[in-house]
Length: 73
Image 1 (cartoon, rainbow, N blue to C red):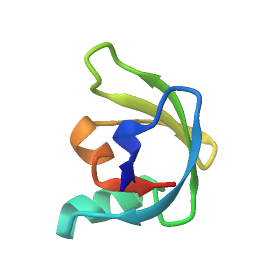
Image 2: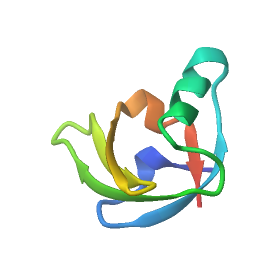
Image 3: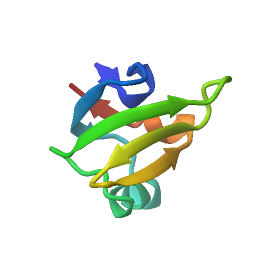
Protein backbone atom coordinates (compact mmCIF):
# COMPACT_ATOMS: atom_id res chain seq x y z
CA UNK A 1 0.00 0.00 0.00
CA UNK A 2 1.43 3.37 -1.08
CA UNK A 3 0.30 6.50 0.76
CA UNK A 4 0.55 10.17 -0.13
CA UNK A 5 3.39 10.44 2.39
CA UNK A 6 5.54 8.13 0.18
CA UNK A 7 5.07 10.13 -3.05
CA UNK A 8 8.07 12.10 -4.35
CA UNK A 9 7.98 15.80 -5.23
CA UNK A 10 6.81 16.33 -8.82
CA UNK A 11 4.72 13.16 -9.06
CA UNK A 12 1.01 13.04 -9.82
CA UNK A 13 -1.00 10.24 -8.23
CA UNK A 14 -4.64 9.15 -8.03
CA UNK A 15 -6.41 8.63 -4.70
CA UNK A 16 -7.55 5.02 -4.24
CA UNK A 17 -8.93 5.04 -0.69
CA UNK A 18 -9.16 7.18 2.43
CA UNK A 19 -8.32 5.48 5.71
CA UNK A 20 -9.31 6.85 9.08
CA UNK A 21 -12.76 7.40 10.46
CA UNK A 22 -15.20 9.98 11.68
CA UNK A 23 -14.28 13.66 11.78
CA UNK A 24 -10.73 13.13 10.46
CA UNK A 25 -11.91 11.38 7.30
CA UNK A 26 -14.68 13.95 6.83
CA UNK A 27 -12.17 16.84 7.11
CA UNK A 28 -9.93 15.29 4.44
CA UNK A 29 -12.93 14.84 2.14
CA UNK A 30 -14.06 18.44 2.77
CA UNK A 31 -10.64 19.61 1.52
CA UNK A 32 -11.44 18.01 -1.84
CA UNK A 33 -9.45 14.80 -1.48
CA UNK A 34 -11.85 12.04 -2.49
CA UNK A 35 -11.49 8.69 -4.23
CA UNK A 36 -10.43 9.03 -7.88
CA UNK A 37 -9.09 12.59 -7.72
CA UNK A 38 -5.58 13.36 -9.00
CA UNK A 39 -3.09 14.91 -6.58
CA UNK A 40 0.17 16.59 -7.64
CA UNK A 41 2.86 16.84 -4.94
CA UNK A 42 4.47 20.31 -5.16
CA UNK A 43 6.72 20.52 -2.12
CA UNK A 44 7.67 18.71 1.06
CA UNK A 45 9.01 20.67 4.02
CA UNK A 46 12.58 19.87 5.14
CA UNK A 47 11.43 17.66 8.02
CA UNK A 48 8.64 16.08 5.97
CA UNK A 49 5.77 17.99 7.56
CA UNK A 50 3.70 19.55 5.94
CA UNK A 51 3.30 18.37 2.35
CA UNK A 52 2.07 20.89 -0.23
CA UNK A 53 -0.14 19.46 -2.99
CA UNK A 54 -2.31 20.65 -5.85
CA UNK A 55 -5.78 19.12 -5.87
CA UNK A 56 -8.80 20.21 -7.93
CA UNK A 57 -6.99 23.35 -9.09
CA UNK A 58 -5.91 24.74 -5.72
CA UNK A 59 -2.96 24.42 -3.38
CA UNK A 60 -3.33 22.57 -0.11
CA UNK A 61 -0.95 21.83 2.77
CA UNK A 62 -1.44 18.53 4.57
CA UNK A 63 0.03 17.32 7.83
CA UNK A 64 2.11 14.16 7.65
CA UNK A 65 -0.46 12.29 9.79
CA UNK A 66 -3.21 13.18 7.30
CA UNK A 67 -1.12 12.22 4.26
CA UNK A 68 -0.54 8.75 5.78
CA UNK A 69 -4.31 8.13 5.66
CA UNK A 70 -4.54 8.71 1.89
CA UNK A 71 -3.85 5.58 -0.18
CA UNK A 72 -2.72 6.36 -3.75
CA UNK A 73 -1.63 4.64 -6.95
